[in-house]
Amino acid sequence: MGTKTITMYVSDMDAQEIAAGQAYQLTIRHPDGSTQQLDISAQNYQGLKLEGLGKVLKKRGRKPGSGTANGAAGTAGTRRRRSRSPNGDAKPARS
Image (cartoon, rainbow, N blue to C red; front, side):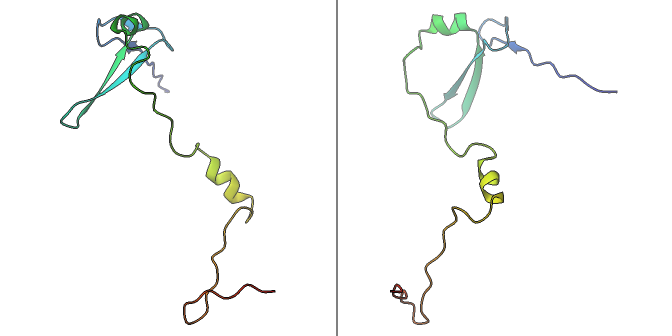
């Protein structure tokens, strides 16, 4: 028998259900280093007057799957190390 998971957002401020796609998630970092994540409704978000405050963090890292597609294509885009002579100096370029 299969199972079905239903995700339902409930506001942490007033305990009312939030429609899918309408939940705001706030992450609060406390001075002791702990973090707290709050789910609030659009109405509560507007009531807090947080719009435009703080800074928007950019997404970091590589997009999922972007490294595997290039790696399977072959050696295109790979870098080669410069070969060195036995005494540790770089070999002169061929002319």
